[in-house]
Length: 399
Image 1: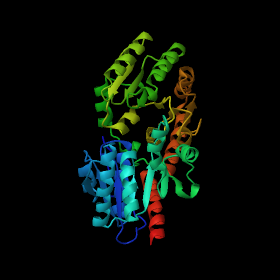
Image 2 (image 1 turned 60 degrees about the vertical axis):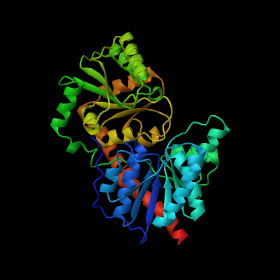
Image 3 (image 1 turned 120 degrees about the horizontal axis):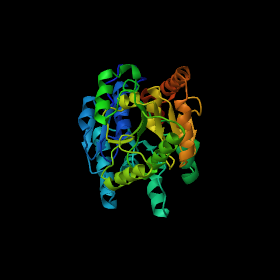
Image 4 (image 1 turned 90 degrees about the horizontal axis):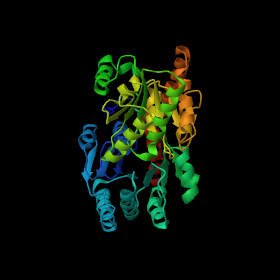
């Protein structure tokens, strides 16, 4: 189930009359960057502005148009320097033709084109720095640096903001921290009906009364699937839990060999396919989280934000996450969840045991605190309001 970006009825502080915001990204697909683009486009329209998105098309173009935005197809996914340069001129022409007020770049290759276009047209330029990009050599650092070159640079967490300051010396007067947002209408436990839960239980082969450890993460090594598998094996050595099932939800994106490697590893630890379920892609993440007793993020590399942690919190679920990257900004240790040492199966097993030992009353306390924190700090509306405030700030300076 995809998040619903229906046009919002919530009042929004108006943008200046005649404002047109252009967002640029490689393609309008289904990822977190794309989701944020749609949410902000929705907010722009609600605030009386015009929302343009330029990308190399994608499955969400129709959804953008349904929200009242407009799409311009360009080869912005290309990293070819000649294409990037040509895109800069094409974007400059678009800015002039459509009377664009501000350009917002959300990915590196399109950002280089957008930066050139903004400079050619004297248009305010905003970037959103989405990840702790790897920097293997000066050339890669240079390529990444465009995301820190905006008139305003939006970091999706304080962790990312720290990296930007450290690597590029971006001054604080240009830097803004705006956490990624959760659609609280979609991730609301009160809206998930029993039919959706039963459908997933049948799909995953879960018995009634199963105690579910859920790991929603694409199948890549940095997500730490093997650590969680080892932690489940450790937990079962110390605690008799015949109904325990670990469900790993996430597409392998063609990494069949890695999936098979994880399956063999689980079998070597005595965990069969009834104990460790590889569920691939899930269209109904809120229902998946509703089925879970606990949601785990076992990433072995620090992540820029970790939206699934905030989504699980919005669903009132206890979470366990590795204590690096932005996870400590989302999870308050031993209040809304638990933070553990990265890569340590024993520590993760201990946290799982803590969760399963909680009384219903203790679980309710964790749930209420998690939902309150998510709704207060990580809602998509809050994210959009803060983003539009950045736009208004720059537009007022530009007159």
